[in-house]
Image 1 (cartoon, rainbow, N blue to C red):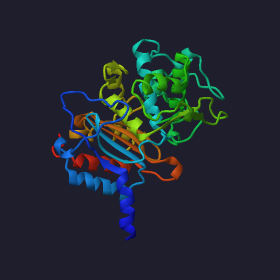
Image 2 (cartoon, helix red, strand yellow):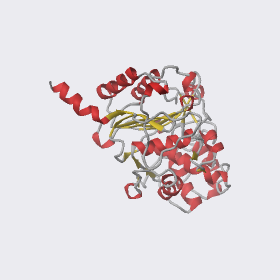
Image 3 (cartoon, rainbow, N blue to C red):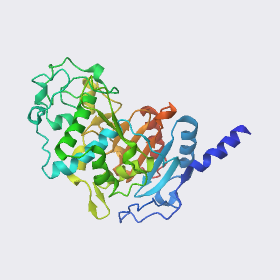
Image 4 (cartoon, one colour):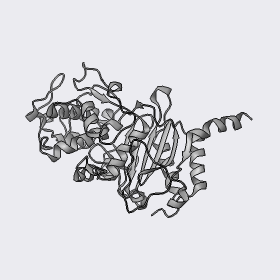
Amino acid sequence: MQKLLLWGLLLPFFSVAQTPAPNNSIEVYPDITWDRIINPGDYGWDNTLLKQLRRFIIDSAHTTGFMVVQSGKILVDYGDVEELSYLASCRKSVLSMLYGPFVENGKIKLNTTIEQLGLNDVGGLLPVETKATIKDLLTARSGVYHPASNEGDASAMAPKRGSVQPGGFWLYNNWDFNIAGYILEQQTGKSIYELIDSILAKPLHMQDWRMDAQRKTGDTTRSKYLAYHMWFSTRDMARLGYLMLRKGKWKNQQVLPANWVTTTTVPVTTYKEAEQNKTAYFHFGYGYLWWVWDAPFDKDVYEGAYTASGAFGQFITVLPKLDLVIAHKTKYEYGRQVPTELYLKIIDKVVAARKDKK
């Protein structure tokens, strides 16, 4: 009886779409709210397997928000998709998006070095480190292993400072990401949160975005470049993913340059290279602050796929072959998490529910 009661309480939080499937030849975008699909079976999905996906999430994961968008409409959602919560390292992929317009218009040049920008840090940088470019920072290949103001990276695996030339070695390093955020603000004269508001939130009609919920953190005795943390809802994360899926286009507006979306979501660092350097993360290569499905794992529906990934269970995944976006959250404040390995199982179950899998 207790299990039946719990199941009854959980079911309302997991829904399958309720409006007609859109014409695949027409690009569909949400307005203020997302539309839904009436019958996933009409879209080539197995309804039974989608129900099993729901049961797996409820039984096996600590998911607090989950949303699958098929061709611009909700296929499946679960949990509280409206609540703002910590985005963790997905913030880095959002930063990559923000760079696009300024690289396109020439305001930011990717070959500009730290030295040319006149930047330094606590205790100073080595001469070789100042030669790192903005591109090196955005691709985590700076060779700068100065301590970051916040933890949560692979800096414990870093080579000795000064032993690596900029661009020569990939390491997931918060120092790179944080100074990249600082540089964007320096070059544009606006805060990252102001840029999100104007470049992304307003054009995409984000439902839950709040600038007053955002804040930076970090230990400035370690590094003066703070981590630009973000709080998003699951359904607004899905809007970010859908913008990427549509190559930066939102309705009739080119919000991000299409060529930037393409450039940032192909591997600069291959999975093979990362594996050889013992810095690999599951089966991903790395682009410009995006994790990219790479050989030998980029087959079939995973061809061209990429994801934003954050600690505790924050993910935005784009599967172009299926015209699909997946947004996933686990609320950090609950002290629970969905590790990447488990999230990949969830994605596999989504894909398995696709009848044609082409």
